[in-house]
Every structure is written in C-alpha cells, then in structure tokens.
Amino acid sequence: MSPGGVRAPGPVAGLTGRRILLFWAPLASTWLMMAVEGPFLAAVIARLAEPTPNLAAFGVALSLALILEAPVIMLMGAATALARDRESFRKLRWFAYGLSALVTAVMVLLLVPPVFDWTTTRLLALPQEVADRTRGALFLLLPWPGAIGYRRLYQGLLIRRGLTRRVGYGTAARLVAMATAAVGLAAAGLEGALVGGGALAAGVLAEALACRLMARGAVREILAGGEPEADPLTYRAIATFYYPLALSTTLTLAVHPLTTFFLAQGRSPVESLAVFPVVRSVVFLFSCLGLSYQEVGIALLGDRCEGYRPLRRFALILAAGASAALALLAFSPAADFWFQTVSGLPPELARFALWPTRVLTPVPALTVLLSFLRSLWVNRRDTGPITRATVAEVGAIGVVLYLGIGHLDAVGLHAAAAALVVGRVCSNALLLAGRADRRPCPETAR
Image (cartoon, rainbow, N blue to C red; front, side):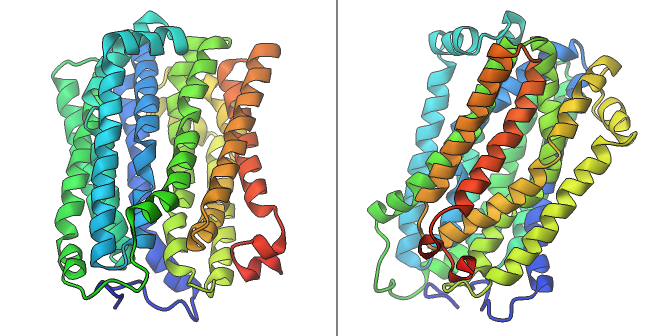
C-alpha cells in the first residue's frame, strides 16, 4: 500500500516483459479505442453530403479543440506521479478543476464571432465554406476540454492504483457513446462536420462519467488515508512540476493548427485539409501504442530506475512492431482498401493520401521512444528537458513547412508529412543528448 492507502503498481525489482505487457495492454487498448474514433468519424462524414468541405471543417475543429485541451492532457501523468496521499490528491483535484474551467473559458472566447472570424479567415486563411462548418462543429465540442481534464485526473489515480483495466472500460464506454451519437446525428440529417463534433462530445462525456464511477473506491481509500508524507505537496510544487508538461503538450498540439495554416497556403489546399485528418487518424492508430507507454514508464520505472533495462527493451520491440505494422498497410494493396473502403474517400482523395502515409511510417516508432524518454524525466521530476525537446520539435516542423510550402511550392499535405517526421526525430535526439551526469537514470549513462 502507498502512504495514502492506495495500491501502487508494486515493486519493480525483477520487472519482466510479461508484467510490463499485462500493465501496458489495458492502456494500449484505451488508446487504440480512441484511435478508432478518427477513422470511424471520417468514414461517416465521407459518406454524407459534401464530404470534402465537411471533412476539412471537422479536421480544423478537432485541431482547435486539441490545442485548447492541451493544458489538461498531462493531468493523467501528474496524478500517476503525484497523487501519493490524501492531501496531495485533494490539492491536485482542485488544481485540475481550476485548469479545466480555465481552458473551457478560453474555448468559449474562441467562439465569440469576431475572435472566431479572425482566427479562421485571417489567421488560418480557411476557405469560407470550411470556416462556416467549423464554427458549428467547434460549438458542439464545447464540453470537450473540461471532460478530458476531469477524466484524465481519475484515470491517473486508477493507473497509480494499478487498475489499468478500468481505464480501458471507460474508453469502451466512450467509443459506444460516440458511435451511437454519430449514427443518430447522421440519421437526423446533420451536416458531416456537426456529426463529428457532436459524436466526439458525447463520447468524452460518457468516458468522464464512467471513469469517475470506477474510481470511487480509489478516491475513498486515498481520502481515508493517514497523515501526509513528510514533504507535503503544495500548489506551488504542483504548478512547478506541471507547467513544463502542460507547455510541452500545448506546443505539441499547436502543431495541428500550425499545420492547418500551412495546408491552406500550399498547393491543393482543400484536398490537403480534407485528407489530413484521415491520414493523421491512420498514423495515430499505430502511434497510440507509444503514447500509452509514458504512464507505464512513470509507474514501473522505480525510484532508482530499477525497471530501466526491461522497460527499454520492451520499448524497442514495441517501436519496431508499431512502425512495421503501419508500413505493411502503407506499402501494400491494403492502403487502397483502407482509404477507399474503410475511410470512404473517393479514389482521387485516396490516391492523394497514399504518399504522405508512407512518409509517416517512422512516426509510430519515434513516438514509442519519445514516450519512454519522457517517462524517465518525469520519474526524476525534472520536466524542463521535455519542454525544450518539444520546442525543438515544433520549431523543426515550422521550418520544414515554411521551406516546403513557402519556397519549394510543395503540395501542403506532402510538406506536412515530411515536417512531422523531422520534428519527431529532433525531439527524440534532444532528450537523448546531454551529459551523462544529467541524464534521468544512471543506467542511461552506460
């Protein structure tokens, strides 16, 4: 038992690949189920009226919603690392509620007509047919950031207690609610972008409720725990720990509107905007296996990095498998089946998606390695290097997009694919660099 009466994942001495697999698999299934959302909704929208502008509008609305939710994304990692006892959980909970309220207020501000018009038509330079549909989709996504922050807090508590299966059950509830809402809204005759926005909102609300219900026992135990640790957690300490993580996630998700801006400036802008969410969804389907690995590393690494070697070995195997699976899809006839039959793209848009998907095949492997490296620094409670690596990644993406579209007159989607790969390489390289005595685990100096 941990100091607050909550079961931790257990000692990491003698950590095996089997134990890592059993701990990671429910979290991976959670991300996989979330990854299904994008292709599913894209397939629904592609089969409704005017698919190209509606797919583009849904992609833009989702990009804006993602960057607005960025400050709350790392609440799961924060709860996994910091929710040690009654007082730390209470303070972390109020911190999470305040942060969720703040990002929701920012989203409301974005929907104010003058702000929205400036953002979409002047900053992002969207075609008017896309901007008009984006407004409605974003309005339906208004509950998104608050619900995300709420459920990630309780997901982190479940992970810290070792109840990773319950995290998967919550995401299953999200998927069912999302699919039901999508079918119902489409049957009601709503435009495709509105179907996507409404379905996503219904899904995250259902998941937030499910996670809170499943965390009731964990909350009762931690609140009934004894005295706090000798070094009690303060709001200042939470903010110091969390700010670099939130900034890193904000910068990472800022890539979506940044890419949207450049897609609208490059050649074939409407086609690029329409296909980008489809390509992003299929790459995310394989990359999400890596995103789920960060919390595994945080939970199982150990105070003295006892779990470093088995976690690294598992990460390398996972990285190779994830990118190999995407390559098998992208470089085979299965790509036509995926983009035309599953995603519902017209043949010309399916062909348009093929080359960027092939370029992006290293991204799943790079994502696994990045998540593992981040977990090392979070375990050390030194989150500054994560921010610096993210700055390098976003900066590299911006430079490649600027050169590719502004100077080489590249097709927007082609430049975006190359930029995303270069950026992810840069972030991994920066986290790996540095003097041996500053690395987060003694093992890494060998």
